[in-house]
Image (cartoon, rainbow, N blue to C red; front, side):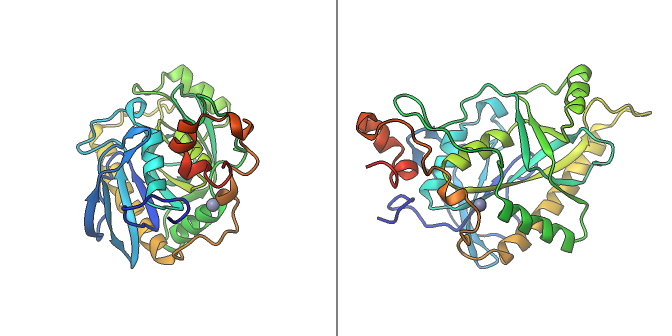
Length: 296
Ligand SMILES: [Zn+2]
């Protein structure tokens, strides 16, 4: 069996995690839909496996078909473990966000490279008999992020390289007071999903990068006229169009396998602190795809 993937499942090169508004990828030549049973339960919906720009990709809509799953209800661990089961080394995530800065305008794209995590959800594969502590100072893959940035520039899109994404539990949006406080912390955008995914991808040694698509200013912004739902939907539509273009060209640009220049592939090295013989056998089996190369 190939290290880092499951038997009987298709081997896929790149994963795409879609969010609000992005429930499918244009131009993908769909091969099959694959529902994956993970040791962490059900994924948000079947993976759509297909070919895009000559590469085999797996697309997953994190909110499920018809957008039924709230940010707090998403089974993040199952989703990321599912990607791992397909042998995926890189995941590109698409998240809709609100802007916390004047210069980050609606329809801009931010390549968030830092997170401030205010959620209270499960965000680790570890625990229950095994302790591990990953390094998370640089929470996204620099290499994958650079490719996305270069492609965004080539496409003449307004794209910001780097930014702090504050991740809130939701589902309600912020109060004005919260929004002002996040601004005073120098956060750039606000969303509800990406920090959790980034953390789990790091534990799974998957390269992770995120396109934060700005739909509107968060509630701190004083405007003369209230932003209408119609404008937000128009922005969302344009954002999805832009993100699809970036994804398509990025997939065409990426090599079939990561170069190994980033540290994502060895993120778990020396991170497991529990003595190997004391890790319960069922945990070893459950986490085999993540810790198998480090724990006998
Ligand atoms: Zn990487």
